[in-house]
Every structure is written in structure tokens, then in C-alpha cells.
Length: 179
Ligand code: IMP
Image (cartoon, rainbow, N blue to C red; front, side, top):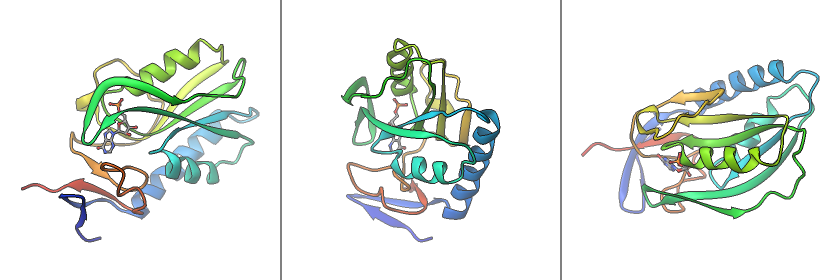
């Protein structure tokens, strides 16, 4: 893994493809065990979670369904604090076991808003699976049942995560380089 440049910033290697895939398999095993005999509906949060969601579902050993929503609170490298729902859910989730699939939890406001919104639609259960969590940035109480990695408060790109639209296609995850 080498340094990469995205827009005006340089990023250094942080998590390799192998490390990511190992974490994804671990989460897939845990979910398969916890949801044995059930048919959970995964709700991937676009755009960032598309890659994680796809790889996670490939590791599952249970029947499942998947759909996507778009919730956005980021502009450039800053969380705006205001969560906008851009693509709404079309499925009926009443009585369903829901797993929200997120690329990264930063302030936690996006997931808090999603839990509140989807909670009103009377699912049987609702849990969060996030590949990355920045615990030092959390601004609310959030129970994240399935976590890939806890990471420091640094901006990251790759494996679905972008910096102003670019970098999502990298297989590995890169961290903003120290000056
Ligand atoms: P939160 O609402 O602050 O938890 O923000 C979550 C969303 O912010 C994620 O779904 C990402 O789209 C974006 N985000 C947060 N931290 C990063 C980062 O380090 N790199 C890229 N996107 C990020």
C-alpha cells in the first residue's frame, strides 16, 4: 500500500484489504449466529456502505434481504450535524428484523436519526453494523452491536468512504497523512 492523493490531500495506508475482509467475516459470522432461523432485512446506507454491505452479505450463512437508503450529514471533511434523508425506504419493515449497515459512525447523528425514523415503522428489532467507529467523536449514546474497527479521530477514505466524492473505489482504507 502506498500513499494516495485525493483532491488536495495525501492519505497514508491504514487498514489493508486483508484486515478489512477479516473483520467483515467476523461480523458476518456473528450475525449469522445471532439471526439463525430469521430472515433479517439489511438496510445499507448509501453511498458509503455499498462495498461493506456487499461484502458482508457474501459472508452470511442465513437467508436475508437487502435494500438501501441515503442519509447525508457530511460536506467535505466536516459533519454538518444536520441529517438529511435523501432516498426513502419503500419496503414495509413492520415486524421485520432490521440491520442498518453503515460505513463509519462519527458523531453518531446519522444513525441516531435513522434509528428514530425506522423505529416508528414498528420493526421487530433494529441493530447497527458499522465497519468503522470513531468513539472519540460520538455526540450521542448509540448501541452499535456489530463493529469492525474502532479508529482514532482522523479522516479516512477508501472501501466506500470518500473525500468529496473521490476515493470510494480503493480496496484498502487510508488515513489523512500527518503534516
Ligand atoms: P455521523 O452522522 O457524524 O456519524 O456521520 C456518518 C457519516 O459521515 C458516514 O456515513 C460517512 O459518510 C461520513 N464520514 C464520517 N467520518 C468520515 C471519514 O473519516 N471519512 C469519510 N466519510 C466520513
